[in-house]
Length: 252
Image (cartoon, rainbow, N blue to C red; front, side, top):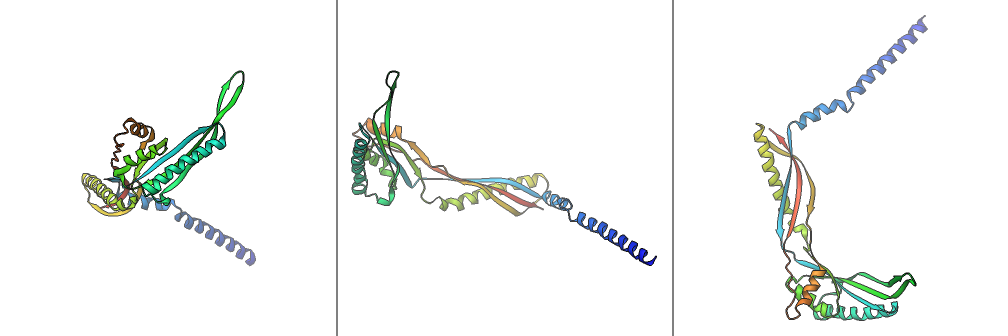
């Protein structure tokens, strides 16, 4: 009897521990903390602030290319190499652009085809393309450089991209403006709800940067060819550097 009593008591004790453990675990479930989080959320304001500054570009990237055609691939490539050498010499010797700021962005030789029902597809010759990406910082002379490159054999001016060499230098300005914008919005909301605005609880930068200004090559080369007596005029315009912040404030 004593043995059975001891066993029964042990089983009851173990059951109590299991039940107690289950109760303890239930108290530690995530659902028990949701209410505290919700309470904190009820005492915060979350807004999005934006900031931007307009800046003048300080560097340009020119896409200058040579396109040549010939009966054979070898001849097309040879003609292309000769024209490109003339263009490269102009950039380096006359315009003093360093080798580091001139790089090949595209090169290929491809066959040209014709097709008719009698002969089918037929190769009629080959075309070679070689495009350079040129970095240039004297923006007032971009039009003159395009004219000179065109005269030197650059018959593919794909585009000119205006940008800033160090966009990070404007981050402090745009972030400061975005924070000020967020503060104004949060203050209005707090006042309208009869509360006071407290400290910043959290800040997340959602996006930032700028979009370079791209001038397409068709218009540029047409303009350059329209009046050989005057240099091509290129207006750089302005870039907009911007950012947005999601800011959370405590309410008093």
